[in-house]
Structure formats: structure tokens, C-alpha cells
Image (cartoon, rainbow, N blue to C red; front, top):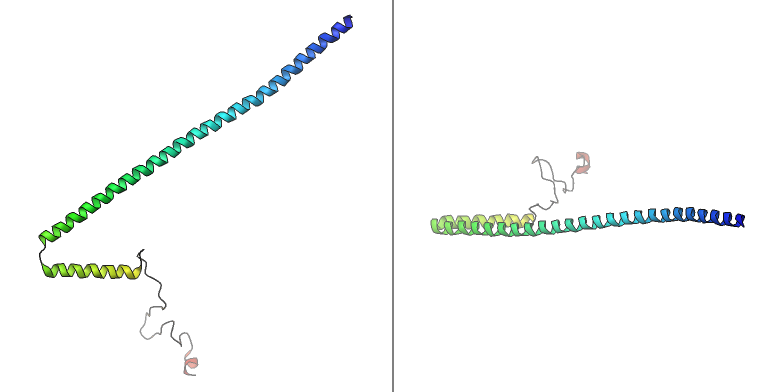
Length: 146
């Protein structure tokens, strides 16, 4: 009977030790899980703040650009009114109109981005030279005569 009691006490002690070890290992994973969830929540909050800052930046940029455009339009209208009021010379106005038409033509030939389209010929540096599209370009003189 004493052996049975000793065996029961030993089994109880071993059970308690095993229970404590299992309990601690479970708490470690829960602790890691809580830390991971906390980090995820911090990152979510940081991302939300970042999105709000980006939205605020673009809203302010749009507002400033709108103000800039309004101011530019006002200055342009002021200059046009001043030119109309102060410059009554018809010849000068015709010259200004011609200059504006010339600028529009040049702008139209270059394209919207102001870049001139590529040429299909090479400009001649010497008037005696022939262009790259000439039939005898790059041929030796003997070959040209034949």
C-alpha cells in the first residue's frame, strides 16, 4: 500500500511537471502571436497615417495649382487690357498678330511637345556635297560615271 501511495505521489509530481512544461510552451506561442498581432496593428496604423498624408498632400497641391492658374489668368487678362488701352497703334497690333500667327505655325510644325519631327535627309554642310538621299551618294567617282 505504501508502494501504491508512493507511486501515486510520483505520478502526481510527474504530471504536474509535464503540465507546467506544456503550459509554458503554449504561453510562448501565444505571447509570440500577441506580439505579431501588435506589430501588424502598428503597421496598419502607420499605413493609414501615410495614406492620409498622401491624400492631404495632393489635395493641397490641387488647391495651390488652381490658385496659380487663377493668378496666371488674371495677370494675362491685365496685360491684355493694358495693351488694348495703352497701344492704339494699328500697325503695332497687326505686327503683334502676325508674330502670334508665326509662333502658332512654328509650334504646330514642331508638335505639341515642341520637338521637331525627324528629317528624311541630312543637312548639307558643304554646298558641293550631295545629300544622303541622292542616287550617287557614297559612290566613288569612277562608279558614278559608269
